[in-house]
Image (cartoon, rainbow, N blue to C red; front, top):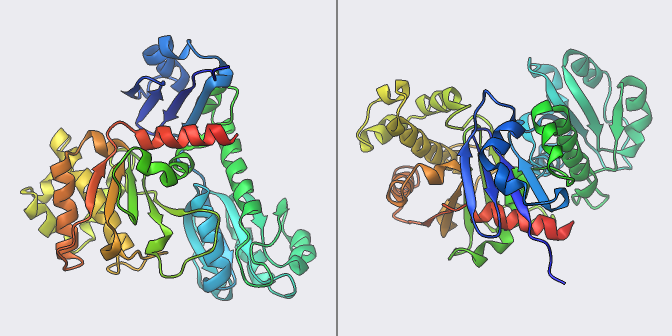
Length: 399
């Protein structure tokens, strides 16, 4: 008996995509309409051909969840929790080293989830009053503890609505990721359900709506089915609100033993539409950007323009800035061995804006100027969103 055909839908911050077995269509979103109304107006005849069980949706339109992580050490608790959060599609606002917690400023924005972690299960007396005072000043919706089990009674007595999960650090100092990852993935689902626009999408599907970065990450082990990709590679997903980078763990010196072959980072303020002003701010604070603008034969006046050319320049800047953030030039959560990269794959809105030559030009500029190298990874543009479709199909098969 043949399997029923599936429909895959991706709702982004500026576009939505609909994939049938035969073709993919993309449409700009109309922000004056409810997402479902907009989707049905443009793709209704396609969607109506599929039953609710056969429609699979992912979304990044809710902007993702934000987290603040409080941990005891940089080398274990903060590092492990950061890795799990990023790979669950969560945007990390800040990390706080507990021993210095009183010197940290308290974020003014509402945090979706606070993660507290530290100590193996035999350790006691890890947290105390400094943590409770800090949390009293912090605005957050959820808080989860994934540290030493001996701390649980005291934390439960002092932190309202605390969710307690098994420790992410085992007695051999290895990472245990599944419990926190499942919690964060479900929290994303609950957040979507709370967004009226996205919640309405359950009118056309009976399946869980997942985050788009989570779906893209699922595709990476399968990527050579569609593209001639030389390992190791990195994937840049540059869209309207964020830029995500997915990378082979072979490119990292300090490799965590997790179930993923590929890890992910998100730069929430490096999008070219919703995060345009943050992208421009980051560009102006990069000492090489003015040289790059000269190379592209434009001036900083391009930042004030509203034109297709300005959008192309912003897309090129986003590629350059995210590569900078991953290189030794900028100390980030993780630095990649970019001289070891053989392929750079681009997906998302960037593939509809830049040509192959424009992408290759910006990669060459980065390697020459920042890494002082003639190395040129192959640039591969996922113009038909095959990677997203691969990931959506893989996730559907695993359900």
